[in-house]
Length: 183
Image (cartoon, rainbow, N blue to C red):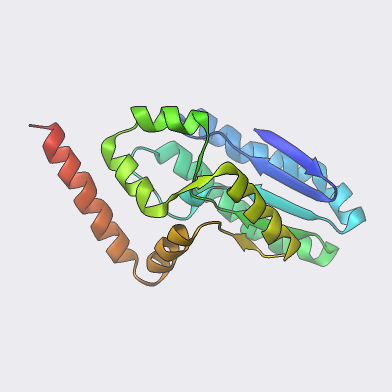
């Protein structure tokens, strides 16, 4: 769990994949801990708190059960903090980028199941500089949901309005690769 203090903004990020249940719990508790220790500072300065949850907190992916569970919990935490901290003039933000290409992610993609790679590709991959610039821009606009990337916005729109279509596509992709691997 990494925390970054930048002016009156607090960023919280988590690790990526291969998480067990214990690590999943640590990611959620880590976000809560950073929120707790930064609250008084943010309240005094009327600051902003951003938790970086990743798109896995809004749309699940194959082979990421513990990671997605921690991200769904992080999304819930931010939603509640937004209401609780609003009376204190603290703006709470949620950043949910799709996969951001880093050396660690590039290695992970080589090792992850093909169906996971295909489903991730629907959401798109982002350059780290673009993702950071976009999230900082979202902070300056005081947006609540900060979701960088056109492809992921289209997938989220589809998920929100027609979740059965996303499930249908995911089921077909997973079924296709499962049949291929069991031959």
